[in-house]
Amino acid sequence: MNTSDTMIQLLQTVSDLNEKVLNLTQRMENKPQTESLTYSVEQTAKMLGISRTKLYELLHRPDFPVVDIGHRKLIPRKNLEEWLNQQAQ
Image (cartoon, rainbow, N blue to C red):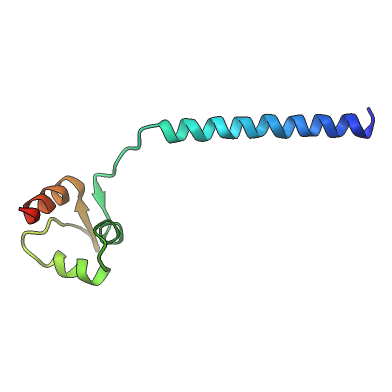
């Protein structure tokens, strides 16, 4: 096998690999994402577009949904959605 044949074979292998990667990426993008049941403080602050400091202020409100697990504070997704809907009214 000469250098030209080896190069062609290598390029074909790379092309096949690229196609497999693209197919895998498409399958992963089409796969329904399972949403978390809870969000961390950082995730919640980012989603709400507020600082962590402001979110910690909200965590002290009696009507804000928060679950303490050890030293972690978790915000239940459904309760957060309900709380936001109540705030919008």
